[in-house]
Length: 369
Image (cartoon, rainbow, N blue to C red; front, side, top):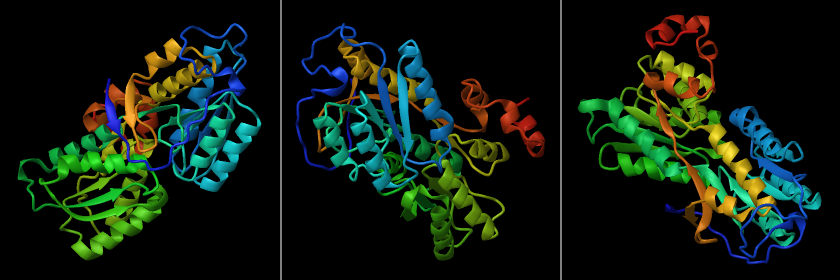
């Protein structure tokens, strides 16, 4: 069992779980309650659409898995806040009003949604944090191992710099949104590897994870440091990497420095094939999404043994200690392992990646349609 400290601040409110959804808080083990059928409703709240993974992978996978686990009787009530924390709070309240049986919540702003999480608890509805840890009385947390994401990015940058790299090499860090606790964990993991090995010349927290904000920040870094003195760029995800690359190209940089990413977006995989982006972090979304669906169904149906087996990790926050969790491992994605990762797992086909413009690069990388 792993225990990880999460940097999330809030106050604690303990209220018994009773009422909607037949949640069993006695700790008794067993299968579904004999008075409860599989016709459950799982509320799913996702944060935004600018990252295509939410609409393309998370929602459809969770929906299909819930239906499969409940013999077609269960359903998913879905809402996407499109990066609006206030809208997500309203969506959460609507799900409470609709008396869904359990809620999977990927917060836009973990602090802003805390009051809604407490209201769900008071209504007897379990809330499972998904992908990002929300504040408030969360029942469980399903995510990737975010510290390892940052470490993988940091190690990849050092590997790209090679034997010629040293502590004088200037690195720009393009971190994620300051309101996203995951971004702070990515950054901490990267710094754990990079500190003392390179010079962090500039570091930015990128508002709302927007690529255009990353482009603006990178332009500022280029103006200050000089386009030829930036040896590598830590970009927290693929969207930010795209913004960084735009800024470097606009400044006239033709030999791009090593640039990291995360999420294995199709555009990023293509950039890795062409050499514009050094790496991304492949996160097996199907595994994360299916596990979240399994945990949600187990919680809604009071299948305590199954719930405990699925949440053997633990995370700590100022809100709660020992939150049941499932931390999914990640893989550093480079040109060398595209076939063994995103293609093998069915995320993309070679024909998705290898457009006619990339034919030569795909052949060199061993990718065939």
